[in-house]
Image (cartoon, rainbow, N blue to C red; front, side):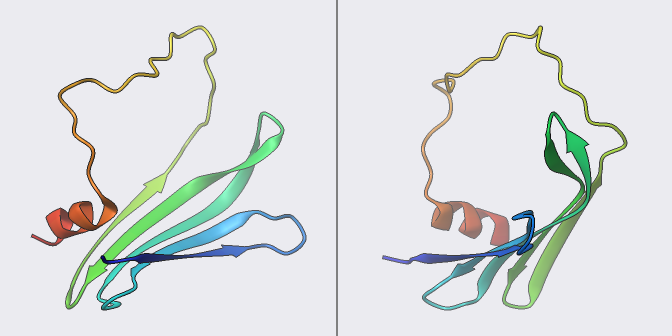
Length: 101
């Protein structure tokens, strides 16, 4: 079985999560990096307005960057908590392999 290693970078004083890294333990060739920044107050908590996702597989890489212009909560919507039957459970390893192709 292939295992994944998770590491988290937080601020010592506030506990704010700045970075998350997920690595394929067996080969160290697959990596996901999440960077969080420009935190703002949101319902009594700090929430990142900037998020960056970077994926690396050997020599291939891809990244996404999000900058949120506003953060709002609308409590009048109905939240669905069930997963539709058309979706199947997939292991993190399978998802990483699909991203590499």
